[in-house]
Length: 121
Image (tube, rainbow, N blue to C red; front, side):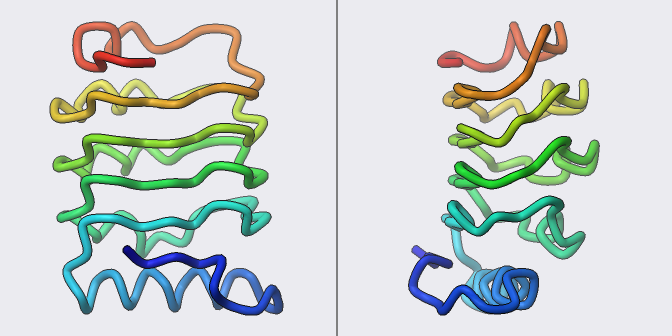
């Protein structure tokens, strides 16, 4: 598992990109970008088509791109404590997703598309 917490905390965006590049090179199935104070996700993350576990907890993400639909093998998505105010409906296209942690966010409602897909919210 690639873990961003092992790196120094300078230039967070570059560290996140380095982790994503390593995950792509290693064909990683898990990626941990938690506690990085990310406000947005690098677009390169959507190219990690083999990810089954993605931990984005404890960041400052306000939204998630509709490109999340590209992570078709995702089983576990952790978005805990980000301040998210909405989720894209495309999250419902993640048919392998069984666990989605949305605790401590600012969500008023969830896309109806996820209700038939995710087993554990």
